[in-house]
Image (tube, rainbow, N blue to C red; front, side):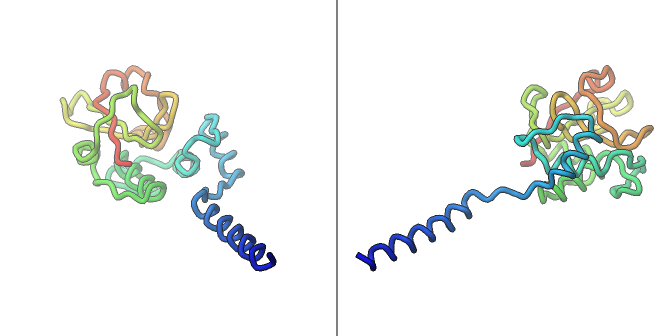
Length: 170
């Protein structure tokens, strides 16, 4: 009987240990998340991609620099490469056009947090000229050549008119 109880106890301890391995969740820095929520002016919930929002908040206000990919200055594709590397451990191609060409295409209505969003311009014709990262509720983060890293809405006239596609790497 005593041997049987010890076996049950050991099995229970082992199962608790295995169970915790299967259900590990990343630690959340609630202070950083609260700061990100305020800075991004978005309500970020526990079901949202918290690492994405925390990382994006650290890039807001970064100045635009053509060919740049650091917080000293970045362009749109450089921003995407750095955020994807940090948040998803994915190495994206360096240019917006290459990111578009190598992504799985996603319609606007099927966008998910972290998907890339691509736009043409009046000068580029059908070629991708700009990219960003979708957040939620029609909002995306990108490096604007005139305003640096900002959050914009897909419903703004310019982005509505120049929409090309969404792209997914995850």
